[in-house]
Length: 174
Image 1 (cartoon, rainbow, N blue to C red):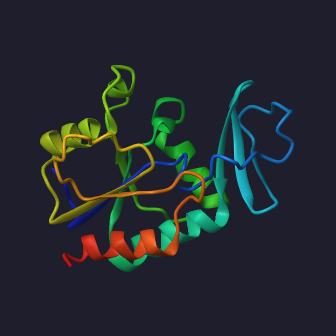
Image 2 (image 1 turned 120 degrees about the horizontal axis):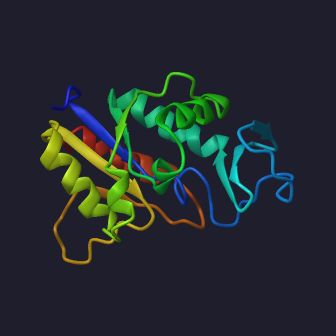
Image 3 (image 1 turned 90 degrees about the vertical axis):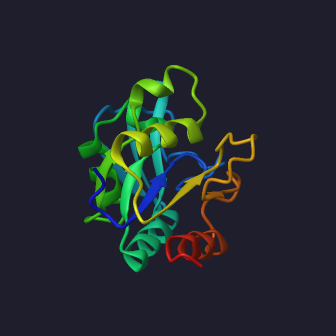
């Protein structure tokens, strides 16, 4: 069951990084090492994939979560290649050392071609609904008009102040 009154479902790519952002030293593969520089934090997952965070965008999520007193469920595909502790380490290196990560949506659903809203709905069915929740995502996939509380982030811009304001209003029941 959910222990938090407010939950944020957090996607990473397109939210805490932008499509156009590349890791410094993009050509080098150094598995498992967290690197920092040029306003980014990154770690190579394998020779072809890099987990990349933009520190200022992580700061916006951090400020939202702190103000809303929310807990975070990782809904990003990153949950399929990184353990929750590894994600926590990356967030800490990007300036959020105490991120209240309490779990992930089911990683197996990412492999079954579920849309993100279906993965979140599954988590809510299994864990119970918090008092308020919102998803930050750039590819939510709800084309059926289910009306879930989501802030769809422009992946070219990443999380912006107006996105944070909308998410905070949802979490505060406004």
